[in-house]
Length: 283
Image 1 (cartoon, rainbow, N blue to C red):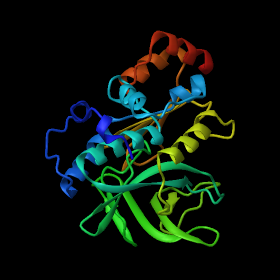
Image 2 (cartoon, helix red, strand yellow; image 1 turned 90 degrees about the vertical axis):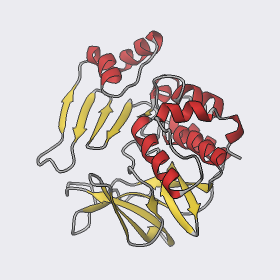
Image 3 (cartoon, helix red, strand yellow; image 1 turned 180 degrees about the vertical axis):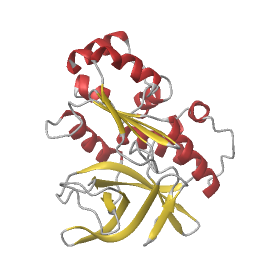
């Protein structure tokens, strides 16, 4: 289903620095999840430059494992699902609606993995960019705290008349964002309707090419560390440090700074041709 037999598993695990157990256990899942989130970047350069993003496994692993590049959630999940399949995990893929505190109904443009182990289900959300560092058990009223980042998973109404799951994160009140009385907002919602590679192809095409997509023409990168999150929104570089009072660190880059920031901060290196095309869009 997910082409695990075509995966270069050794290269992927070496890229992650994973030298541990390969048995399909919860310990292995936790180790792979954390290593993937901290090693694989979120970036949409292909969409910005070409309005096209190949999603076949050969292209995805050549880009994300073979070079200093990242990808969107669809690329992350395509690669990660092949890994889980190759290792013998039981899992399925779902898609969800990114909310980030919005009350509007948005399209299902975020892919995630649900892993089944010993009668329990785990949300392994490795492709958000600012992803949780650990899988979260799919059980109502689950609170997750890895020591730095905190989340809540709740079963609730996710669209009119439909019950599903919502992942919440702490958020400061601000205009246009819906938060709870105790300072939490919905990051994204999802149901357990199973998705397949062909479904990801459809959503991936929309995300890369539609003028209505938030990421088809706007450069965006994220890199997560255990104690901070870097993001680049066109030329606005922001660093969030949880627990540090005050607003995040942010500054507007000049275009000439972008190549160094991509390499040094995000670990993303583009060809000279692609960098020239990108800088022309950022002026």
